Image 1 (spheres, rainbow, N blue to C red):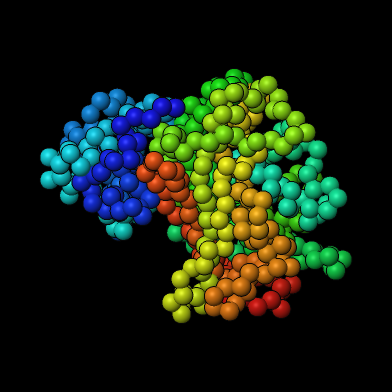
Image 2 (tube, rainbow, N blue to C red; image 1 turned 45 degrees about the vertical axis):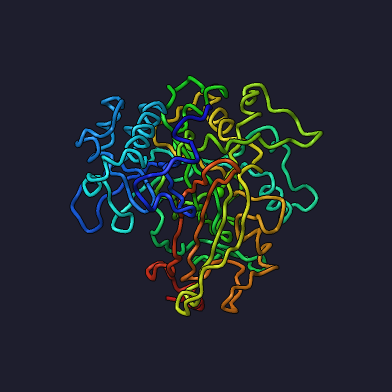
Length: 453
Ligand code: CA
């Protein structure tokens, strides 16, 4: 991946907010999303974040402002999900990003008078899940996460023998994927405490978040035709943030022998902006250096390019605000900060593995990385690890403590790339408030639970 004029750190935009050093969306980023003006009857359509504005790609197309973009890519921008654009492959997105960069750069100021026609304040917009996600797969690619969680349940043998050979994953649920800002209901389910002889049905008492990175598929592959590791990244449109909400008590009771089911499929939150691999080009990193003694990836999961630059130098943070903190005007507290460079498997390896049996991926499919945890306590990407199964609760600035999420808690995930000599770019936020469990699901068996509304 080569750098071009769109990555030039000196590039500035006539959209003034895009020049703020703190913005996630400078002109060097230009992530894709789907939006419309809030409280309007407009059709959702494709846009790009620029500073605190959205470039309306359909309006810019109508105004003839996007140069050298294939017609089918321009037509795709008017559609209410990005699948049509994703289907055209990464080249179409690259052409749009270059055209938008040319349109928005400061020395193209002749376009500034058109701003009101082609820009919408993000604050005035309704944002959507960026693609109609046909299939959602969740992996388990952080060896630190797998080791931490494994050690809670199998202290002597935390990593199962397959872990370093095969990227572990499961098929998730696409219908319950929601966009950042959507409140999430605490699920009810069947659980069994260690001191109980029989399970009961009621609201989860061990609700957790999982900090993950999602990859949207661009061009798919035909059924029966695996994607090689060398081609894998060309099938990825871009990345977003994912919160894979998880009910640990439901999970513990149900997960054997077929894996997660109702503990995970009640909600998954995605950030609204998809950051392309083109925008991420200055921030690529070596794949995780496997410790001496670990097996090399099998040939179908190995390429020198992937080893050299299959990683992404992306910093990820989780912030938490309780209802009481918000009422008292206390700012959210950062709970963790880690790096995506510590993942055992690259995005390319996840794509190659997923299709290695002939399984077909389709444009708009979502692959999530699994919880991103690092080697330090501060870099653990879920509460199960961060508060170590409830034994080391987190103290909030309000004086409250958290072992698992309470009703009213808001989880805020952020991601950004910083590297000397390059403009910082960010992913925006992936946030959601926990609502109390639905009343109708609170049965007689759980009448004794206090349910905070
Ligand atoms: Ca997960």
